[in-house]
Image 1: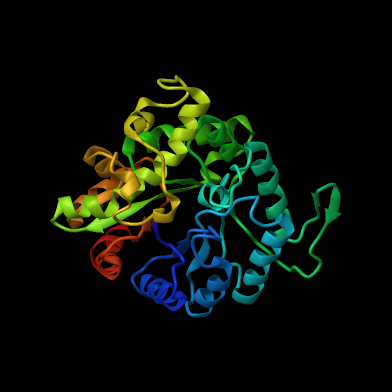
Image 2: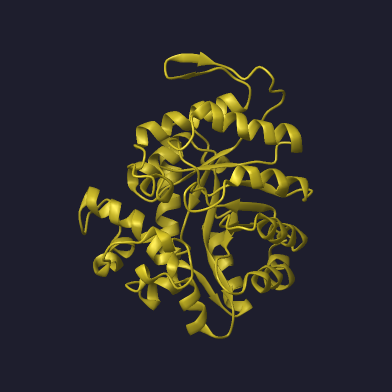
Length: 332
């Protein structure tokens, strides 16, 4: 199992770079950041410095979207980083939550997202693709490689992931839901004539190593609110108790009363008071080292290839070090 570190690009950028360097020293192989231009600093600028200050770390957004930048710009940016640092980027992509909503736009449609996945990958790997009806190719690319991993929750998005994406990003660590969603992606891949084993499965969730479970929960409760944004969209689309979406995913948002993006992804987010302890425990990795190892082994048995650790809490360095010293070596 691989391990990734997920950060927000809060200023100063030097701290983001420092934490990514620390992660690589501790055995993490991937570094991810949020991508929301209004809320945080521009990640692709910072990626260049992370790549320059690490040797093997693979870098990418968790996640970008097809509406913030034109597709040829996104492809060219990834391809430029790969040309400079040796094909060490991954394009995590989704419909767009905070990046679109904060700017007053609706998330992208799945149809647009599916088209963007093909176009961005083709352009970044040096092939011709059609953008707004015009064939384009980036002629300077040599030996380009860009895996595109899609974030998804709902049945149609999971199906699209299986049909088109090189990887699946699932932003929660609940064992039941992971099993259900991974199965959905793999079934869609088979139906599309693809080998499901070629799709990398990445589970992303907060992790907090501590004997003080109450404090760990409070530091990670924000995550249930972030996931709740996507769940609310699913409920709006499919209705409550839909056969298309498990109740285990949707039931907890009944007490949700709006959401303030100014606190998005932050410990102490007041918009996440509705998230019960049970959901925090199910969606996150909390507790002593042994509890993390046990849950990670269960995730690995479900086919998870990478655990990406959301590190937005008051023990960022300690969590990276604990994983490097005690948890990652258990999965070498």
